[in-house]
Each structure stands twice: as structure tokens, then as C-alpha cells.
Amino acid sequence: MKSVSPVSLLHRLHAWWEHRVLWEPKAWIQVEVTTACNAACTYCPRTVYRSRWHNRFLPLSLYRRLLPAFAKTELVYLQGWGEPLLHPDLPAMVALAKQAGARVGTTTNGMRLDAPLAEKLINAGLDLMAFSLAGAGTADNDRFRAGTAMETVLANIAMLADIKKRLGTRTPAIHIAYLMPASGMAELEALPSRLQGTAVEEVVVSLLDFTPDDDRLKAEVVNLDDPARRATLASLFERVHAAGQAAGITIHTPFPGDSTMETVCTENIQQALCVSADGEISPCMPANLPLTDVHHLIDGCRRPYRRLTFGNIGVDWLPVIWRRPAYVRFRAAHAQGVIPAPCAGCAKLRRLPRT
Image (cartoon, rainbow, N blue to C red; front, side):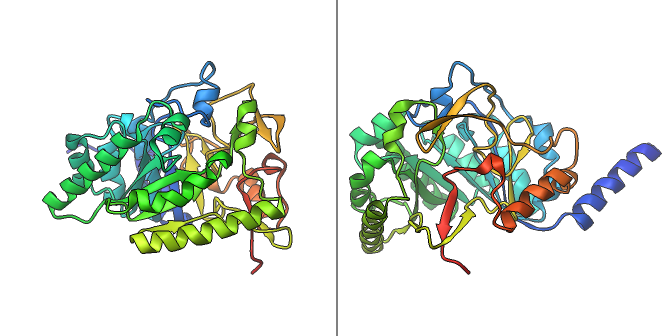
């Protein structure tokens, strides 16, 4: 019988104490499994900063260090700045997170999905698969999302639905992650009819909230500080919700609040966190790009980009990083309504009704 060294025993005991006793339940953990991608979306940092970009794949050994935390996490979302379906261990990652007790989702551009991979992900227990679009028509979507084809995405959605039916399962739920650029607002209204009759159950609409350093993208940022634009958006969203209901599709839209409302971060940083493909822990994915010495756009002005992370899971357990004084102060500032300097001007600060 092989003996266990005192050092190994203490290590296991420490890990158990950190995760079972000190770690509090989380709403979600977003895990970037890769920063590599087979597309070149015009608005994506990977496209704009391609000459400086680092393609990384999260090692399965590093991913396993997150499993004890997953046991107290409602949702594990396997997606970041890259295309998750490129990671050869994605089905294994799904299965491990499911075994830990979490719901598991991912977002894909849909181009690499084939029947064998779809079956592997279904059998691994994937709960949700969202497909990215940025236009209700083929021309606009394929222009914004270069390297993808809307017709292929819709065909692969149909394939996934057929495989689910054959296997007798309701999961993964099929969603659309819809990026609405300012020039594509009119396209959104056509989306419900475009998706009617497909297997899509829900659509989550988002705006361009991280703007890479490309002047052509300035015009694609929806200005929520403009009262006229807010009114236009509110009217548009109302019509889209009604059209979605008629088509049997639930559509979620961002809230176009005004200056009388409370400013909060939409990333739920008190109850959620992100893990990059190199193991760095951050409050959100925009804070965790694999880049240095670049600029991004805030309110149309160039600002230096600085990565904001608080530790690495290859070095410390996640509960230890969560309790780091700098991370605690960061979350406390947000909770008190004091926006930390790294977050100033971020488009993820949305105005919501005061509670």
C-alpha cells in the first residue's frame, strides 16, 4: 500500500478547507478555454490586435484546479475571446464541470460544429449552446463576422436540433448571442421572423461594450447617454420583444437607462469571475485580454489598455485569490458605488433602476 506523504496530506487538507469551508457559492464562473479563433469579426480585439495577439489553450491540468470551486457554482460558462470548439478537450471540460455539479454553457461561432462533436458535447452534458450573430440578414452578419457564414450557422443549429431529437434530450438549449452594432439597429427588428421555425429558444442582445483601437468602430458604439437614442432603443426593443413572443422566442435586450438611475456593472462581480486561458483571474473578460502595450477606445478617445487581474490559478487556489486584499477592495468599491479607476468609462457600467 502506497503511503501518503505529510506534505501531500496537508496540501489536500488545505484545498478541502479552502473550497468546502471558505469558498462561498458563486452565480457563475466564465472560463476562457482558448484565445484562438477561426473567424475575424471586425469588432473583435483578436482581429484588431492580431499582430500582437497571443493564441493560448487552457491546459486541462490547470482547468482541473477549478473543479472544487465548480461544486459551489451555479453556471460554468466556457467561452472567452476565442472559439471554444477549437479546444480538443472541450467535451472533457464540459463533463468535468457537470460532474462537479454545475450547469455548463458555451458560445460558438458555429462554423466548427459537426455531428460527431455535437454528440460528444451532448453526451458530456452541455446545458446551453449559444451561436453568435451580428445581423438578421446574411450580408450584414457575414460582413461584421468575417470568416463565418450565417447560412452555415443556421444549418448547424438545425443539425444540433436533429441530433438532440434523435438522442431524446432537451439539452443543450439553443440560444443566439446577438451583437447589435449601431449601424445594424434596423436589422434587429427582422431577427425574430428570421429565426422563427428554427430550434432557437432565446436571443440575448448585447451592444459593443469593448471597443478596440480602430476608428471605424467608433460609429458602431450605441450612445446610451443620448436621450433620443435611448427613446429609439426603448421603442425598438419593445417591438422586438413582441415579435419574439409571436415567434415563440424569448428575446433579452440591454436596458437603456438614463442618468437618474443607478450605475452598476453588468458583470455581477460580487458573485462571479472570469478565468483566462493562461489562468489569470479577473472580474470580467474585457479586463483580461492577452495583450500589453495597446490602446482601446472609451467615448471615442484612445486610452491605454491595462489588464486587470488578481492572481493565477496555477499558483494559488481560487478562494485564496478571491480573498486577496486588492480584489476585496475592488469589489467593495463597486458595492459602494465608487467606480475604481480601471473601470472608468467602461460600457459595461449600465444604468439600472435604483433599488
